[in-house]
Image 1: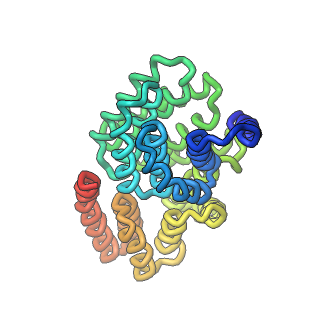
Image 2 (image 1 turned 135 degrees about the horizontal axis):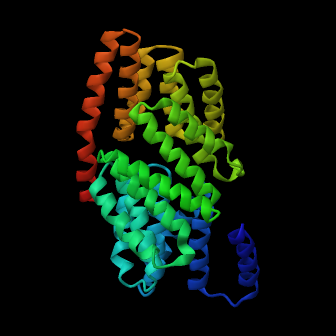
Image 3 (image 1 turned 135 degrees about the vertical axis):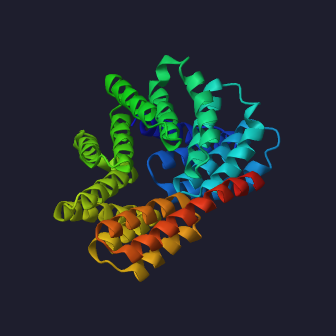
Length: 345
């Protein structure tokens, strides 16, 4: 809200000032970031594409070049193109030493940590997240970033099978977010906790975490992508608990949000849920899984096929269960190739 207010003031000031190409370029770069924050991702992409040639020719201003590559990486991350995100972040990193503000360095480490997490490179991710937290802890006015970075560290620990440590860290992050009035981060923390419990098969605790996240008063309009993820996971948890009618309500709510935000990955993941729990059809399920494979979202393929396998085993459909357990193993084998691809960028 404060950024929106300041943006209108800056726009007015720009209209009244003498033309300066570097100032306009800087403003447009910040505007592209602003549009990412308000989830107008295609508008951000359009701005970044329009600035590509001009920015790459700005040899003298390393700050502008840093922002161009860094914000381009953020756009690719938001659209789940993690390899491309890392490619841009690495280009940004070549200018990072010229950026004097250590908060910019912390932000860089946090965002590249998130991208490495997206391709299951948890040691790389953890290393960058810990560097970010070390910086943020020195700044009392960046409590929100301390919370986000703590959650990133917890998520990596969980993936490294340090489950108790991860859950403890998530709870600390939730407490800090609640205590400091960062409501949205408290919601994210509850969601993260629910994901942990769902993976561990603690379905009642998972359900409670997701429902608590949704019960916290916050304007959903501002963060549709996060609410889509929460509603998807709540639906999946309820399906696993055989609470089909309740699950269908949240499934439909998530489906509406996926359509509203045009979130292609979640459209596919919801279709996968449909063909597992509502209209069992392994040929259509395979088509949807292939969509994830084409996008190299191997973590989602592994997660979805393992989930399908467990469900079919529970229903004593052993042939399908075996098929999808094998698919989950094959997907896991492909995950290291993402790191190799990122190394080549």
